Length: 205
Image 1 (cartoon, rainbow, N blue to C red):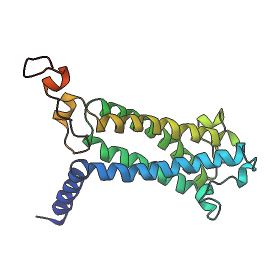
Image 2 (cartoon, rainbow, N blue to C red):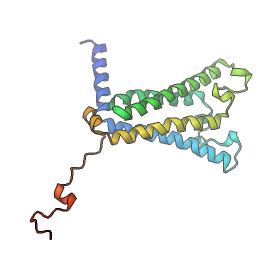
Image 3 (cartoon, one colour):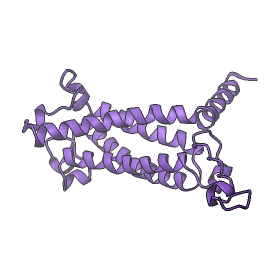
Image 4 (spheres, rainbow, N blue to C red):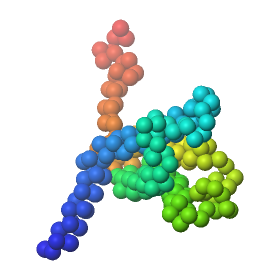
C-alpha cells in the first residue's frame, strides 16, 4: 500500500467515525464554535445599538484585546471556510428531514462563504467594488456590514438548530436509516391495562 492510499484510507476511516460513533460529539463541538462566533456578532450589535459605541470601536469580546480578529479579512474568510467544510463533513450523518434542513444551512453558508471570499479578494488586490473605501460584498451594497453579517449568521444558525432537533428526534423511518447514535432512545409503550385502567380481576374495583 502506498503512502497516498494509506492516507486516503485513514481519511475515510476518520470521516466515517465522525458521522457514526462520534457524530454527536463532533456536532456539539461544532455547535460550540458556531455559537461563540454568533455571540460575538450579538455583542457587537449590543455595543453599537445599546451602548452607543462608535462602529470602529465595537469589536465584540475578543476583538477588544485582539483588534485584528475584526479587521482581518483572512480571519473572517477562514471562519466562513471552516464553517462550510464542517457542514459538509458532518452532513452524511443526517437522514430524512434533518438532512434537508442541514442542506438548507449548507446552501446559505455557500453564499456566505462566497461573500467573504469576495471581501478577501478585494483586500488582497487593493481594489474595492463600486470604488468603496473598504472591501464590500454584493449585498453590502444595499445593507450595512454589521447588520448584514448579523443576518447571515442568524439565517445559517436557525435551520442548523432545526436540523439538530429533528436529528435527535427522528421518525420511525428516519430511525431505521440512521448511522449514528444521536437520536434519543424510544420510550417503551405503556401496557394496555395501564393506559386504559382495566381491572384484570374483572370486578371493576
